[in-house]
Image (cartoon, rainbow over all chains, first blue to last red; front, side, top):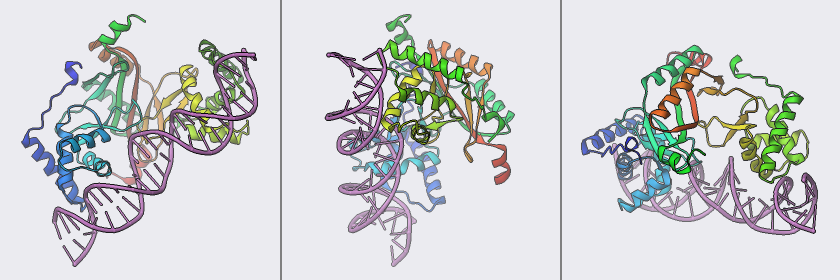
Length: 164
Length: 164
DNA sequence: ATAAATGCAAACCATTTGCAGCGAA
DNA sequence: TTCGCTGCAAATGGTTTGCATTTAT
């Protein structure tokens, strides 16, 4: 995996605490409750290095023995984590299963994906963001988000399969 | 629906003929066969104005009574139409069901989608395309495609729900 | 003739939902 | 004490697959 795609955003205990606090706020605003399972899910998301499927996150949780977090519970929690800005959907283009990645206190970025080996590079260019805002504005739209993935072949895969 | 999102690319008979010819080439190259059902599917895709789910395309085919094109058959055909450049996946961001749109002899474009009412505007900016190529190149990637959707609120929906 | 295409129904599988009991506030 | 939360299992629903039959070449 390329250097740029490894963020190694180890979840420091302070960061986890801030995320949990934010989560509590979102829950409180909707009259929902903080539970041990939800806290474990938040921790697992923040600790996860990379992009994951819900099923995989559930497996990790169960391996950590935190208690067997039922698949249904994790599925039910994800939309709340997204609303709290702790997780966000990612890699929409590949496959069918929904994927997520940690989002809390991480800068916005988009993805460059190798269609051969699946390597993922995160990138961010302000010029690109600005251009998107301009386009939306031209049509009178209020831009609220975007899905942007570049698909291609990484250097390694290009070398392997040659100029073909 | 906004003016920009209506392409009205009525499938002239010549265009259909060229698409079918292209399709035959792709089929021939893989030792596959042209059939009445596949021809009907190609026509239905070219005539469809907008983005569609496979299930919807099958329904249209059946209504046109061309013969009842079984859902499974349409599902099996779509990847071939994509390979032939007659259809292409579209609107990855919204929902789960795969959507397609006609691609034959149509210029490349991306989508600006209203998350409130679903209105879709197609746009194309060369500067945006160039920027994407630059980014891929910077990481040594050979760019082969991209998924790019801008999400926002259209003028009408902004007016309705106010500054909120 | 030979192998691919089709329709039908069954199989898949990620995600959702119903429900009885547990747990947060 | 009140409701939301959880686990389990069953249900959903888009998509895929197996198979006997039809059809292109």
